[in-house]
Image (cartoon, rainbow, N blue to C red; front, side):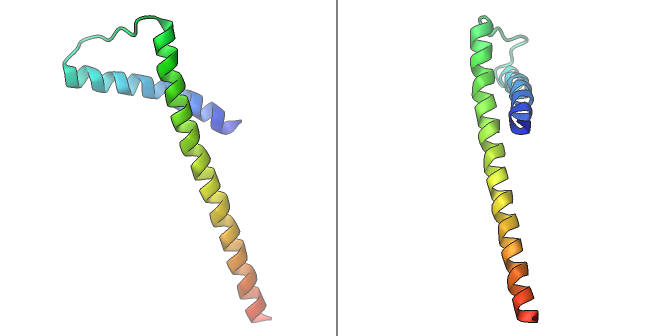
Length: 80
């Protein structure tokens, strides 16, 4: 649930960051998305990008934590 919230907000922010890059590179003063549908499409793509990145980070963190617990258990066996 937290990942979805963060991905929604970050996806929304990315729309404006990407728009700013386009404006700077092409030297535009404004950008028209052509309606709400293209804006929502870009927001959705950014949402899934951020959500997948956060999911991979979560899996990496869980795996790293399991490895640390395993290493601690092995150290405890050698001590005893």
